[in-house]
Image (tube, rainbow, N blue to C red; front, side, top):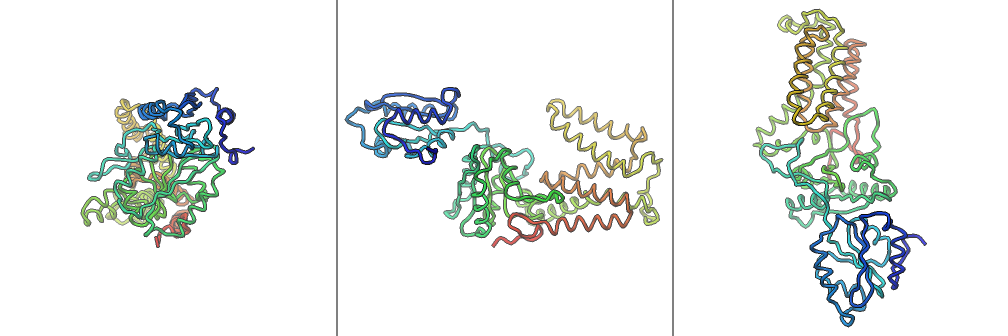
Length: 454
C-alpha cells in the first residue's frame, strides 16, 4: 500500500513498524524513537534530534506522565485539547502528513488505542542573527536582514505590515527536498492573474526538487534564453525593501534556507533601485537614481567608445585631443581591454576566497602590480588602465550582481563588434543591447521596461 493511503492503526506496534519501514530510524542517529507509558498505555514519540526545544518537550512529557488510566480520553483529539498545554498541536490520521512532519522537525506521538497521531510543533531551527546584509546596506534604514529560516523572514515582514490583507501562502515543492516556499502579497493590491500563474506553476513543480534552492526555483519559474543575460527577478535581503514592494502590489517569494527573497513582477528600473533612494529626501533620492543610471550606462559604453575613437582619431575634436594614446601600443587596445576584463574577474574571485586578515595587504599588492608595473612593462597603456579602473569600480554602483554581469557581457559584445567592424559594429552592438532590454520578458509576460501591476 502506498504511503498516501496508509492510515494510522489503533495498534501502536503496527504504527511503529511502519515508521521504521519508511524512515531509517535504526540507521540514522538523529531520528529518535522514544518509547514510554502514558496513562497505562504504550506510547511512542518520533522526532529529529537538533530540531527540538528540550525545555518545552520536558514540560509536555511531564504532564503526560502524570496521567492515570482513568484520566485518559477516548480519542487523540480530546487528549490534545484537554491534556497537552501547548499551542501548536495537530492530529493526523494518515502517514503522509506524519512522515512530512517528522522530517520537518515536528514531534509525533503515537498512543496505543488511538487512530490518529498527535503532532506537537515545538521545533526550533539553527539560525544566525538578523544582521544587516553585507551587500545591500543602507545609510539611514533599518539594520536587520533576512536569514535562512523562513519563519523568521515572514515575521520580519509581518512586523512591518500589520494589515489583514497581508497573506502568506505556504506551498511545498519537491518530492524529496519538500522545500517550503511562501508567497507574500496583499490580497487587495496584487495582480490576480500573476498570482494565479505563479500558483499554477508551483503546483506543476511538485515532482521537481529544489537542488540549488532559490536558483532552481527561478529556473523552473522562467526558462530564460541563454543569449539574453538580463535578470528576470529582483532579489533582496532587506525586509524593508520587501515590505515596500508588497505594499506596491508585488509578490514576494520566500524559500526556506535562503537569506534573500524574489520579487515579482520586476523591470529594469526596479532592479537598479536600492534602499537609499527611499530613505533620503525626494531631491536627493532622484539625484541618486539619475547618477546611478548615468554611471551604469557609462560602464557599458565607455571602453567601447574609447576603442572606437582610437580607431578613428580624426573624429576627436581638438579640445579633447588629450585622450589620444601617446605611448607606444605594444598590444592592440582591444586585447588590452579584454585581458583587463578577465584580470578584474580573476581578482574578484580571488577576493572571495582570500582570508579576511589578508584581503587588505593582498589588495594593495594586486593594485600596485596591476597598475604601475603593468604599464611600465609595456603590457598595458595608462589610458586603458584608467578607463578599466573606472568601469571596475563603477560596476558596484548598482546592487544587483546578475545585472552587473549582464552589462559586462553587453560591453564585451560591443567591444568585439567595434574591434571587428569599426563604427558599423558599434552601431550594430548598440542595437543588440537596446533590443536585449526592450524585448526581454519577465515571468508575467510583460515588457522589461514597463510593468503594470493591476
